[in-house]
Length: 376
Image 1 (cartoon, one colour):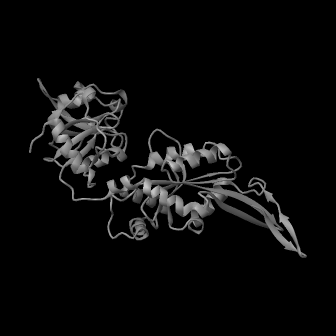
Image 2 (cartoon, one colour):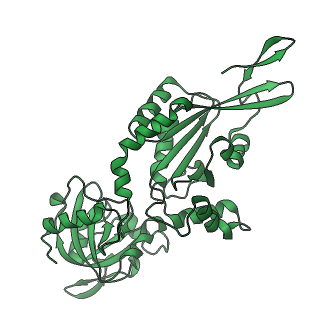
Image 3 (cartoon, one colour):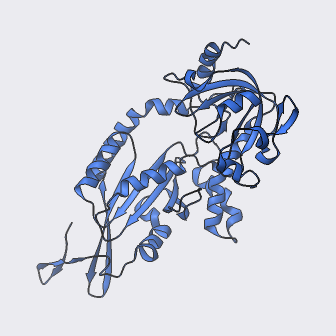
């Protein structure tokens, strides 16, 4: 886009200059301006964090993290002085890392962003922004949007973003430019993907493609059946069956939802990417790894002394934040990893535990009862 000044009845082109030449810095200037005035460019956004990186084993940070009015998380990334190389891959990585954020975690994040004086209003401000009277965990962070700001975009980058949007992602791109007019600095923010003229149509197409996902997010009364994820390469399913437990850890993000596992309730246990492995009755509250006891032929023993435990889990066993929490389970039925129940259309969730209220959950339980031969 070119800008012209009308001067003595003629058009005088205003020259575009690089952001570097204009001495506009990425974090100090651009990020600060967008942090304070993002709603002037994109209505209905609330920034809840800057330089967000509240995850383990990664030094990567999101430039800005926001919420939109639909309670979606919004990852905002900026690049100055290049063609935005690999921006989309970086942003998608960040989107996946924050996709499991809960409402309470968003409150904690926003409190840190606001600072000590305003932190006490974080919950009320988010609820007011979303138009909610009370938190609605099922509707919170149902999707993650991505917004990119770059001084330029390569053809490879725009092609990949257009393709990703066609596959159902929601990525918006702004091209930034700087102009000098006398002693004044003018900044341009031009939305190039999706084009404004096509945006409404593309939203309709995306909504049509997501009808199934939308239906899955509809709520029904909780049927009393619990859901849990268990296991990865660090956690032994053989031990879980033998001693009767499931566990999660690494940080509060992963272990906190285990508190949803109410003793006396039935829980269906899934291993992501593998399938459902078992069903049992919760028999106790979560216990930190260092204190968790299991039954052996010689009586109760600490699991740390008798289990097949990965070195990382053992190293964190006494850490009050990172340690695994173990939930005792009385198994009703289990299967080995090689015979996991994995069928199209079964419910899945990224949290360590859940009390699902989607229409898919009762149907999933019905099918799992048949597969595990459970009769009520």
